[in-house]
Length: 586
Image (cartoon, rainbow, N blue to C red; front, side, top):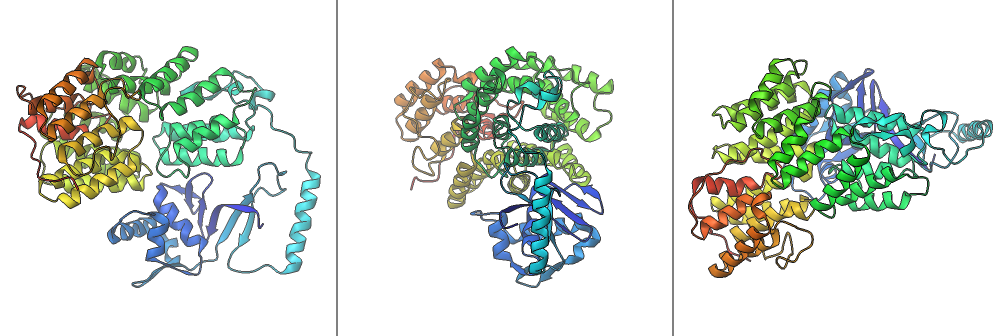
């Protein structure tokens, strides 16, 4: 027991399964996001003891400045999920919380190489100590159970007992023979993770992948998939997971598995490396529809509208999961297929999923720049939250905040902050970086320079690979809030991490803000020659040209992705006014 790892807790009618990432009340799964479950786990671990508010903040939001209101709302959300069983959570006024319940802790052996116990999970009551004679009896039972088990051997490929071509993860076209030395039990966890991804529940998918990875120390695919679907609720960084995947590769792993590991690593290198990795995988398995969707998004990132639309049209949306069809249809509408998308909706696609149908309709309204787009997004976010479909809620709050910013809605600041909070709660804090950048620009515009600097720093802490930091560095150059290179240190046009002139564009912005106009023009020319106007930084390049005297031009981002921070440059272009720079570099 001393070397065991907790996999969950149970009290009353409540069971928190950390391995599967789910919460059950009265034998019914409830739609719980990661933060409420994390709060409950903290209380269960300290059952019968006072957990102060300061300790809760440290456990739930380490090194983050979170308001008391956020904690209060989280506690209320947990009480809603538990229903009548929430009576066990006692509020100690002005101090914290205490869980008054007899909590059982579900344990499993820490080392996967040990033979399995006769009982799959040991249950310990943490409120009382076991008598020595009972401990001895349990030890004897465990030993007898071990001796009764067949001698444990190194795990064989999952397909050893069946068809090696049997599909395990259809969205990646991963077959049984791709699993190499993975344990047979890993197959079911992988399939459960894919089901979670198909219904849009990334948090549960990550929890399942993490559970599989923790219990199968040989499978290279598991850390690779965790890196591909990484979220801010993951305990390990992308770099750590990629390194783990490479270390686990063995001679039994086939070329497709090795390419999946390369694909996981490509995010750390850049868009060109990721495109090459996806193309290689699709050459071997063209039916991998999740990779096909990613390939379309890579075309979006480089501004290739025709290529993106070609990949999106290749989808059979009436056969794909609704969570995927929703994005495919919405992006098709953004690239000009509005009439075709509306015809598919009229023909019954997504008819059984009204929330996802409404998402597509709201994106069509975005494409048309309809006046009621903001109201549509607000209503959809509220409906998704009420239905417990939090993945849609987070996605829509993200869009609603960006739309409010782009259209100068007075609620923009509040909506941006709410969206950031939702993304953090949902384990997607990295997606909050562009929204924090927009909030920083908004604060700067209203003269709150110190607040703008803080928000921009927070965005930098959450931003991902170098490509995701380009707009942050450009915004920093425009606003003059922090020293050059704070988010992306690049000397100019020779940076191998980029292929569309991004470093030259950054240099051009810093030259412009320093008053070196000829140098700025030369840098902009270099960026254009490298193809920056076909990249996600096209709007920032157009804005720099405007500042240098080019004719005014309007702007509307459709689709809004891949980087919502672009909305800052687009908004300025749409108004055709020079940037107001009131801040000063420290």
